[in-house]
Length: 238
Ligand SMILES: O=C[C@H](O)COP(=O)(O)O
Image 1: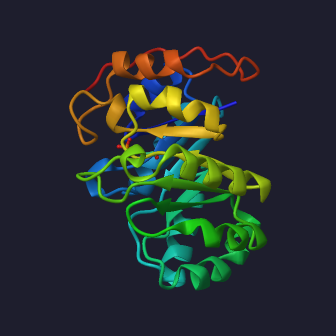
Image 2: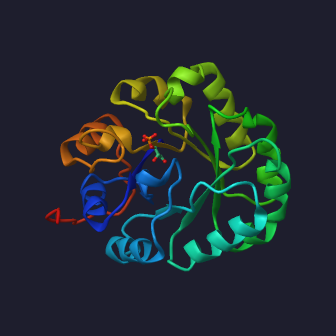
């Protein structure tokens, strides 16, 4: 079953995501890059608000493949009480060493490696991610002004990525300026979740999340009937 990951940047947006029964509430600052990080206080406030109704993930920022910096950012983010931590592997060079160096963090936290369709082909990294204990992998786009995931990778290539990741025991997500029109093509690939920000917003990923746009995406993704029922009021936007 393919879930909805909704990238949000405030408690008000988290309320919209909960109202729409998003399957993962993903904390991200879209103005600071593909994996822009919110402050610890902002993430902790969102975690408090969500209060276990859905899993919460958070991004650690667009960091280079420097294990020490990533380790510190992972620990800071983990201290906010999130369920998953998403870190980017932006460059091929150094990515394998970075994965290896994060083994201890993987033992303590659920790490999701985010690779980018507009950077390099990450297929060869999947076995390493599995061996060193990553929880999952995601393919996204790094440059949000250029192509969308579905412009860059064919459905067959995406299917191979999802299949290999899942065979290795990694949960697998797809994102990259996905639109409503992409969903029928992507659903048969069986990814664990599809990630959205741009398609949920009023006008572009740095603008605010719109309830109607979120519901339109929700309506075409299957609802997980086993997930706990949520009573989540919408909040006024300040
Ligand atoms: O993790 C998912 C991303 O936030 C997707 O953002 P996007 O739809 O703007 O590419």
